Length: 447
Image (tube, rainbow, N blue to C red; front, top):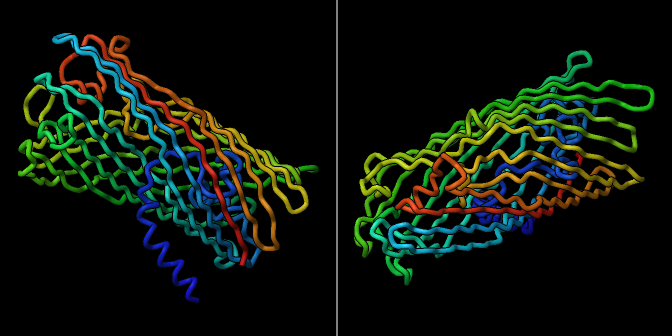
């Protein structure tokens, strides 16, 4: 009993750190089962986490009196590189910056499901989606007076969710509805310091933090169609958008010695997009194939992050004070495809998958601190059945993505260019790359 109490205490102490882990937003899958097949979960029937992907699939668990629970822990290791090159026309100064970091995030997910009445199966899950962001340290920066400073930028974005769902059956058709209560927290810090990193320059230095809760609805349909040698299962689902008005505060620095700090109320607006999912499963008893297509409406929702204060708090590159910061996104809509396979051999399950989605960010929307999506993912999984339990191990690799902005090749001006350079250079280029490696461990059990 004492060990259980100690475990709960440790979990409560470390949960905030897990929730605010740096990388994890826009992952291809949540939960052990879906991770092994690269997120192809629209027609998958064996997980309580279906309440998030397609709640209609919960109805496949009807006909059994068992309760189910599942826990999975993902260890994300992300490698990011930021580089830029800058030549200023007025003084011919040239600088190069290179910032490389390896970020780790421990992301736990929990789910529980049980049958209610005869034709309804209910599940509730807690998904720690992680967040976006990173650190940029000691980046050489020239202010509008051409004085060299060092820029230190930190950003964190956390987005855990509590999801409930029910699946029920009408004749041979499964229907489902889910409800997501999503929490978003943003912390942003930009300090321009002297070359010794001792004093914070009041020009363009600030700190922002805020949080908000949003709601989303998930709807789904699925059906199992038996044939002579196999079963065909299809599923479709819709996930509504999450809209956040993140309320918080901004601290601004008014003197170079930092002896005067002003605090203002502020609000940030950000929206996460609608998802349309569809997939089929070919079940050959000991061998299963999963095919999924997801359509994500980034362009309609993920357009910009706007932070607005009740009073001016920042000096713009043009010299006047402003109460607004805008980070434009303007992502393109995206089609994500996933292929997964499972082989059942005695008490073992072997899985593999491939997930692809074209990079949705235009060059002017690339920001060195915001989470990127990765185009190519591969997964390999292994599971062992133990009576009423299944233990999962999965490895996921997201191949290196590199995206860049070059001033001479676009008619658009990025927000990072405006915020970072102050004066128009004759040459400016920056790039960001990201690579992912994940290990997922999970346990699924019937009670």
